[in-house]
Length: 258
Image (cartoon, rainbow, N blue to C red; front, side, top):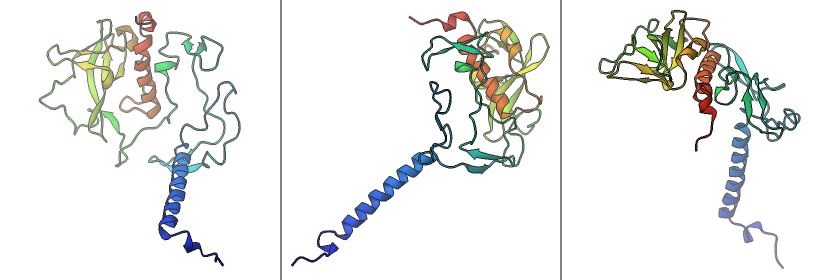
């Protein structure tokens, strides 16, 4: 008469294999659940924002993260979504239709000119110093003698007109990398920041050029509250302004390429 012995048809190898499958499935579920802390829950345009309350199964409960500046951030963030402040209108009525800016596109936070509403605080180093500052503050940094020193070089826009002159360089203390050119406008009205990724320095021409903006548009670059530092949201706005210029600086850039 047969007996109910589990070892008669199930061995240790099978138990280990099934346990691994269960563990791996749980690990995948956990990782997929954790990566929904940022950017979730998704918002449906047809449903006018979030379709409902947070999914307690697929969306993790809010977790506290202590930031270096002492602030506490919850992720995912409870409550209503952050309003998207933009100026534009949809070209069509269907959900997901492209938006057209209301003005020149550089200030409308649409397309390449859009940006995230980051905190209006400074990014800091491990030593609690402001991370991105000009050389006049980070005086222990200097331009390498083998490379061209951009300070004093003229800056030209996409229209090959003079926008200003490089007055200083802004470095990232945490990465030992140059982030921005400080440009003194040609009319002497103010100084603005130009991201180094949107500019090209000529070793032999001794000029700095950018294809993102026209020379006259430099006067509209978002300003910083502190002349010797830049906050996270100010960086977002400056980068978005130059990013928007790649599409909206001229009317021709918005046309199709054949």
